[in-house]
Structures are given as structure tokens and as C-alpha cells.
Image (cartoon, rainbow, N blue to C red; front, top):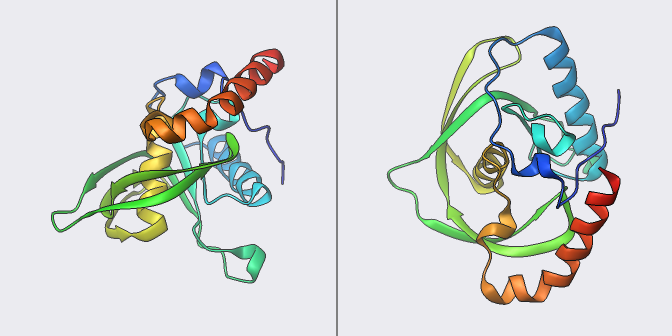
Length: 177
């Protein structure tokens, strides 16, 4: 188990459009497992490649709470895609991010999605009717792969309320680069 450094808001890699993974290798699977350990350690439910400084299309998600005794159900997703299910409705929720610690803002996203990805065994997986936190995590983490952050879509009021904290975080991240 290796804990990885999480890049903070302001780090340039968080704004990159990530490259596809052309082949699932043992090294990439090991990286994904380290990402899971890092995510669990940080108390998150998802982590994307750019958050650990890798501009690759790799996401890990686990919406269970192992710290509360639940059995982990991790998803390792290479090159994930997602779309909205036909019967979905938009749902508001206070989102946070391991790369933007201690800031939570209301974000409206589709409530039911499908996802397609390559798993750690190189197999294509399609999941339909993903709802709740899983649906939100899929969308949030896939946004990271496009260089998008949840603070890009928050209300003007939330942006104003958090502007100085985000500015301070960006300055700190740039010093650490």
C-alpha cells in the first residue's frame, strides 16, 4: 500500500484533458490500487488520475464506507464514459472533492446514469441505472478527466462565498508545484 500525494486546486494537472489508457498493465493496476488506498485514507468515494498528478483516463470509485465497517466494493475504471439514463431527473447535492478540501457546494447533476469502462482485467464493463452517490461519483470523477472541477458549475453565491479560500488554495498549490 502506498499513499499518493493529492494535487490541490490550482495545480495545472487538474485542468488537463487526460489521455486514454491504451493497455491495462500490471503497473497501472498497482497505481489504481494505490489510488484506492489514498482515497480511503482521505475519506473520499472517488479519485481520478489527475488528482494524483497523472493525466490519464483512470478513475477509482467506492461508495461504501469501509471506515464504518461496510465491505468495500471498489470500481477501477480505465477510460470511463457515461451518459444519462432516459428516465433520469436532475438532483442537487452538496459535493466535495479531495483536491478541494473542506469546501462543499450544491451541484445539480443527473440522478441516474450508465457507465462503460475497462476494468483492471482488461474487460469492458457496462453498468446501467447507476443512482445516488455512485451516479454522482461517476460524473464528478469523469469531469476530472476533462479538466473540469465541481467549483466550475457552482452558483455565483457559492463561488463568492468560497472565492478567497479557493484563491489561497491555488496559491499554495502553485508554490508546491
